[in-house]
Image (tube, rainbow, N blue to C red; front, side, top):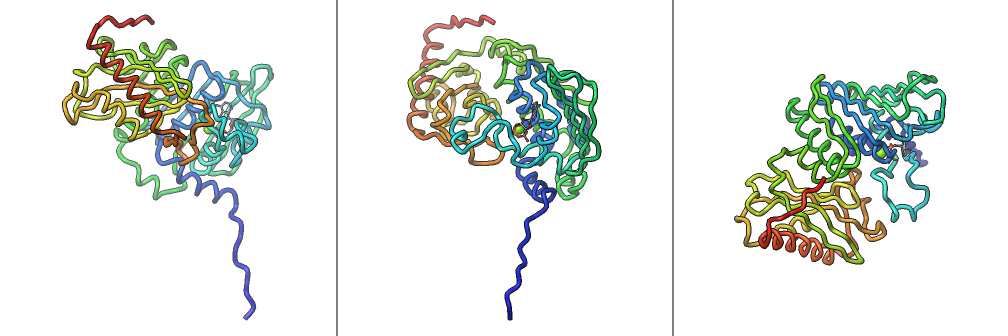
Length: 341
Ligand code: ADP
Ligand code: MG
């Protein structure tokens, strides 16, 4: 019997839908991706508007660079990005995005409307896409920046839609992502509205102000500044005083080059630095920023980019631990911490 050929390239719409499975788990994933795009576009102000925990509407409005007409169209293509051009760029990543997948993925599984304008263009561009299919594109008058609304997430993927949890659970996930991006970028102002109620209105300012604006005034007296610089990395941020440690987890944040990262080994470094000052099994508050040359890290491990590999993990561990130890020690010696903001 002659052999028969049966392999075909998938159409983009299906490839995008498959990619979306990894990038977009729930409304919170969309909020994260779009907020990060606004940050990458150098926005000073980012508005997040939600209906029904993002199920029916997620709208992100930024005052960033905006896009040209051609780029507006290109932005929905898979692997289409302005952030890297060649393979070496993967070791120089300073932006939040670089995979060129988020908009293509989101447009594959929702009804999307984009309005965007660059500063010196007279008119902007409006594009409407339903499940990867372009429904409309026209020139429109609009503000400088980008306004993207994502309606009826998973409208064409019933299994995913049904998998979503209650609005309060989905909203919890959204708030987690919102707070992480907001903590990572205190120089940017953010608002969050849910069902026409203002949930957050965060002015731009210093990190300590952002922490207090998110978590409440009671945190002000509980924070100790943390800093350690070496030629390999610099660590700075705030830890909560030992007696402020809680039974529940959730307020422990690592940012590597301003990107939120989950890293159990580095978490262990912090916990070890608190050794003897907090009860077993309690969790200290921390918001720590690691600055490192991007050539020493690999962020390209998972599509959601929350995992990272350092080329010298042991050094990072030691430096983080030293930074936190010093802060715990200083706090124990003197309680005069400068809270200028
Ligand atoms: P990535 O962020 O990985 O490049 P995305 O699919 O999220 O991929 O976005 C694709 C491209 O669209 C970006 O590289 C950027 O050029 C453009 N873009 C997306 N969102 C915005 C925005 N809010 N403002 C300006 N440009 C944007
Ligand atoms: Mg992106």
